[in-house]
Length: 319
Length: 188
Figure 1 (cartoon, rainbow over the protein chains, first blue to last red):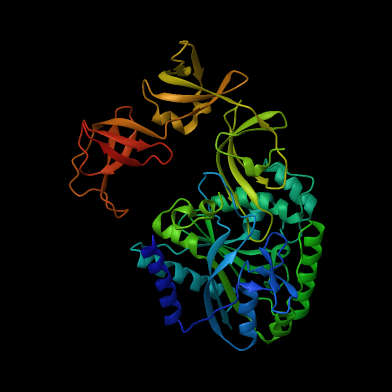
Figure 2 (spheres, each protein chain N blue to C red; figure 1 turned 120 degrees about the horizontal axis):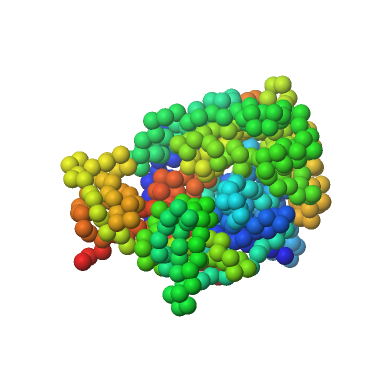
């Protein structure tokens, strides 16, 4: 088990060394974690020597710290770090793709767009496959989400309203829930009719709806988010962007997320002001990618469940 | 109230009066949105299979099901017949209800029959089944594509499996019914 993991982290470090990246360390305990409404960070409290306390949380990704380093002038950086997501914990025996604590690889390159980012991601995965004696001869497919969506539903994704999506779900035989948001309705179609139909050998899906832009910039026509994910064997492996570097827009999105968190009854955290201050110093374009190392290891070793590649899966620690 | 997070293989979901049995499921958190449980479900009445995504936060209606130990007798044009070893009661099921699992059936195989309101709706196979190899090609080179040297053999119920090249005709092997993979050779 540890031989495989060692081989993988060595391959990843070798790949980035050859390409002139430097490895950085980022904090796991922070004051402002990612506020995406879907995420539930582990919250904690920092107790100072003078008895005063401060709210804190464990990172769900190292993204904010990485971008601050870019803003301070680092050009090509990567990190391998533990990240934590509460609620991603299931106690049954079914094969799992989630563990509340997992290893993430994040890398950034200033001056690179997301198309070149796809090439680099493909090279990285193939470099690791090769280290494990597996060859991937075929280039990974590249699936343009709005095109695929139009084939399925006849709709222009950027113009479709929530009611259009609801109708599209119905005609595809999918159930909907009255509480569904635009993104929920899109995801019902995405997870049943797009994700599962991707070539198993590897496929990028790119150009996400603006509603799922997160921290990415928009395509030049303003219609979509310059974001992609890579799927291999039906499994999502990474999530990548051309990074948003507009501090004002980023603040607007954070405020939207705060409001949404409050609406669904989740705690929100203060906006990371240092990130907002440093973002405009990041060059355009800048590429960033977050890749689940455990999922990659599952793929390389043929493991069916994330618990097969972890020495201490959460389910054994929290019975 | 049952939530999609309680879904397991074999859970029976009532959607607008139609009953669907969960054949496969996987929890997915697409991008940064709500989490979903993606399922492949089979309509108990029509046998139709579809993919359905349930949002973790929504509420579902599950149906109670019961299980009976039975053994497989035979299959013909009318369907597949199983017998209760205790009271000798026989039930017949269509191929649609059993789906892909029909290929694992062999005479005398013990299975669990899932019933809803006394009607059989699905079967559950043993995780591992023994089969006798009835025909095996002489492997000179084997199939080395996957890195492991294997060959394809035919088993006593017509099922085929990829096995290591040392397996000979007449030997008994164990097959995993969840993956269809060869597990081990049973020593005589």
